[in-house]
Length: 448
Image (cartoon, rainbow, N blue to C red):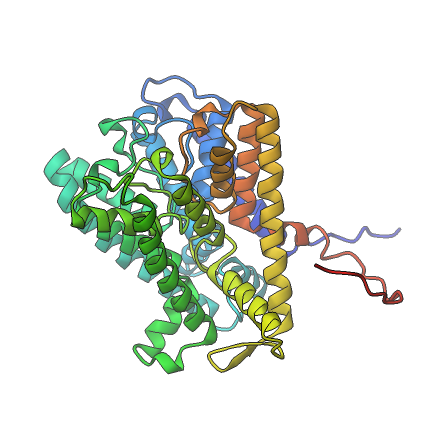
């Protein structure tokens, strides 16, 4: 009798399934009456949307986190944010190390895929460093934020608010508990607060810079020339996007949202507006009140997102830079693309174009679905909403609560694909298929 061969799940399929299990578990916990403030059961779709947004560290919400969820519900959301930010495999490995369990080679491979590490060797040591760094950074952020919140809310609640917003900012989640100041108000009441703004900006950038970059910087300290090419590209793009974004937001908003503000508040507002689209989701200004130019700039920054192997989403900064360099090499008719005296291989160019095109097609498809099912919604608001979802940002002009069931399901799929990796999900369904050895004749076509 022939034995049926067992089908092994690939690393990517395990990661995708793992995130799905966390989302469904969080959904069931949020549906419990104890999770809501009024003790009633919240609808399945609302809970699924919230659980997906938290696990995929997005921040889009259909109910106000402070006003709707009880302390238990908020803690469920906080745990999902932390697991979603670090990756469930990272949390699992730390538990295994704590319990003195052996980490198998297959588990190390999945872990490497989870944080986009370039090699399996030393992966457990890197994970320990990541968790220690996360604890220190989130702890430092919580202390600084608690200084402000304790004065407003009292000691216990102030510390809780400090911890919640520090974890949310570091994981680039964008969930907030500021509903007591006004539903869905986010950080608008702190637009001129230096402590809150700079702490959140530091947490967002640190979380979004990438675990591999952390490791490289801690090993090589201030010896910039010794940094890997990946680290150099990440730091360059981070500086350009933050500095350039701050300047452009000032140009676009100086006669709009920033009018009447002092110099300090204007700077903080423009800086925060440049950093938060890097998939953080907080806002210190009313997104709906931004000029069209600023909304378009936000969409561009959201689409690019943060850095590979970080808590951030988007196509990633290195992908955007590779695109620009590839375009420049074609214009100048250069042989290959080079940066910092290093040549980038052809596979990186193929992957960059695949990631960008996949995210763009998913966002456009969702836009068609939402506009088709709810034609009264403004196209600009829908565009910002869909890019925010696929890039796991969480910024919104306020239409999230107006979405019908079909539109909400479209946003849920986008958030899930954005966190797990849209291209990775598609590849996971085809990676075990046999590739034909036949090569067909080549023929030229017109391009451009």
